[in-house]
Length: 128
Image (cartoon, rainbow, N blue to C red):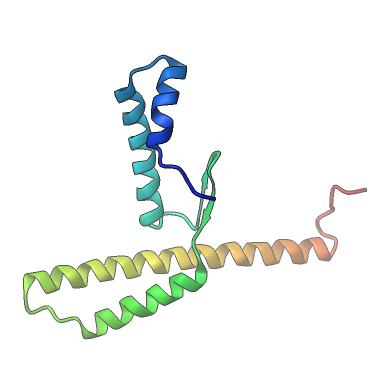
C-alpha cells in the first residue's frame, strides 16, 4: 500500500466543495501540522485520527529513547551555551518520555484491575 500525499486530495476536495484551492490547502496544512505536533510532542500515549487510524506510543521504543537520552545527559557538559541548550533539550525530552511511560503504566494497571474485577464477578458482562 502506497500512501498518497495530501496534495492529491486538495484539488478534488476544492472542486467538490466549490471552495478555493488555497483555502482547502490551508485547512489541510493546519490539520496535519497539528497532528504532527501532537505526535512528536508525546502528549498522549494514544492518538486517534478519524478516518486515518490510531497511533500508539511504543513502550519498547520509549525505553530505547529513555536510555539514549539518559546516556546523553550523563556525558553532556555545560561549557558553552550551545551545549547547555542541547542538555536542556535532552532533559525536556527525557521528562516527556517519563510522563508518557507513566500514562502507559496507569492504563495497563487500569486494564488489569478491570479484567480481575470482571473475572471475579464484580462486573457483569453484557453477553447473555
